Each structure stands twice: as C-alpha cells, then as structure tokens.
Image (tube, rainbow, N blue to C red; front, side, top):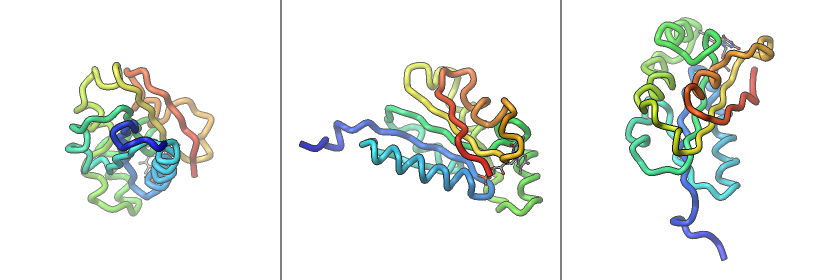
Length: 145
Ligand SMILES: Cc1cc2nc3c(=O)[nH]c(=O)nc-3n(C[C@H](O)[C@H](O)[C@H](O)COP(=O)(O)O)c2cc1C
C-alpha cells in the first residue's frame, strides 16, 4: 500500500545560487528527497518568502560559500561583477534565515549544504557553517567546483 500525500513528510528546500552550481546541487538534493518519499517544495531564495509560511516537516537550505560564509550584499555584487545575473543579487540565504527568527530549527529538523571552490575545501568555514548557526542543523558540504 502506498502512502497518501497526507502521510508523506513535506520538505521545504530553499537555495541561493549566483552562477548555477548550488542550483544544480539543489536539484540532486530534491531528487534524493523525492526518492525517499518526501514531498518537496523548492524555492529560489528570492521566491521563498511565501513558501516559508507553509507547513513543512523539514527545512533544507543551500548556498554558495562567499568569503568563508553566507553571501552578503557586497559579495553578491562581486559575483555580478564576475558575470552573475544582477537579479540573483537581490537577496540571499543569510537574509532569509535571519527573517525566520532564532527559534526556527529548534523544533523542526533542518539541514544545510553549500558549494565552494575545490582548492579551499579543507578550510572549516563555509556557507553551511553559517547557515547552521545557531540552530542545531545537520550540515553537509559535499560538492565543490
Ligand atoms: C564573491 C565570491 C566569494 C567567494 N568566496 C569563497 C570562499 O570564501 N570560499 C570558497 O571556497 N569559495 C568561494 N567562492 C566560490 C563559490 O563558493 C563557488 O564558486 C560556488 O560553487 C558558486 O556557487 P553558485 O554557482 O551557486 O553561485 C566565492 C565566490 C564569489 C563570487
């Protein structure tokens, strides 16, 4: 007997991506969740405001590493100067997480992932380090380029 949609857990996957790398990792994350029987709502961070108000059982957030952390307006502008689309610089995961408030993630499972350059892979600080703080959030950093 298969689960009805009402039985299945729901996940909200929010991502930021200036050049498309984190977006493609997000697609793989969504695919994995769906294969695991999870109903997924996926939103680019600029569109995630309304999605964030919906009921969900799991939050997954992904972002590129900028200056050893989550992006800021200035680092996104740097990315635009390097060729990223200007509309992608409007907001980022740091702003979205801040707007959620400090209690988000305390009572609901959450996970964070990031992308970063291969050369500095061994460095401890990355976007998911910041996204997971101060919440108790599972953190993965599986992909770099
Ligand atoms: C302004 C800027 C700052 C960056 N800072 C770092 C960094 O501190 N550490 C790192 O490993 N990669 C850094 N990167 C590289 C990105 O994290 C990496 O290319 C990422 O995969 C890009 O993801 P996206 O295509 O989703 O934007 C930086 C890139 C930019 C544009």
